[in-house]
Figure (tube, rainbow, N blue to C red):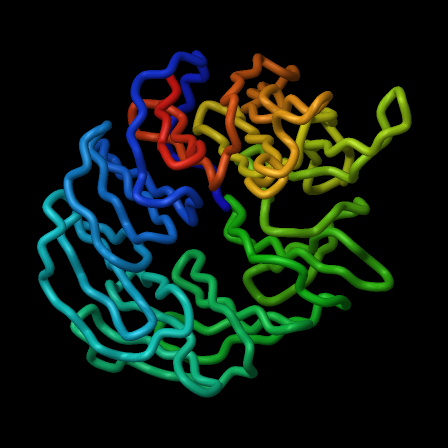
Length: 343
């Protein structure tokens, strides 16, 4: 996860809400022209504010130039972002979401043990053998492939650059750093937390014992925002936490106990951070409303600034997907089958 290029307003005022075709949200992407694209288990919905402009099956990857790719297991379609009109369609087997390269091609794991790059019209560019399972991540036009206990790097033309072993199992998705490095979550005997991969494959551990995973956002300041280790509250109950950690020293800059597990993190270009906390949908449906089990306040968004908490907004119902920041600074929050735009 990377910080948004847009500033986060953080006023806590609901501007609009719109029903979604599915309850659980996989991804929310915001475009510079105000459009946003929400992927649920039912497909992709393209929104212009609260207006649904078009919808499609499968997942979605935004591209430059006002285009995006919708995809499924049997291929992908290139569409106009505003109208949804299909400009090209390619039938081929996809094992995961394609990722765009700067030259306009797409890279993805193909059948067998192949990493494949193709043009938007499906013409092959290159392919490379990689151990399965292996998942690609593109950062600054370098293709990184995470294996079980190593990371490989390829250039934009498919030439192998290097292979690095971070002394532990890869324990989540890779994340790009503002300085061009890549953050790798690891779980090992010597180090559990994160390591940084430099441009030549050199390894530098973040000197802190941290819970590795997918929910980490690197900040331009070199700090990391991530769920912290659980800790006991005043009555001895284990509670989830969120931490801000200096990526160089490993020092914990901020650490806050939160009412429920962290479900999403978004950071604006102005340094304001939003942390979504919520019980799972299964826990909500099983326990909410029982005597002593009012989980309403557990569904919330905590806003953090450089000097600590700035405020909390209560959703009142489970937050069921990742956060995103719109071009106008609104925070986009999936809440139990609808998308809420929070100023």
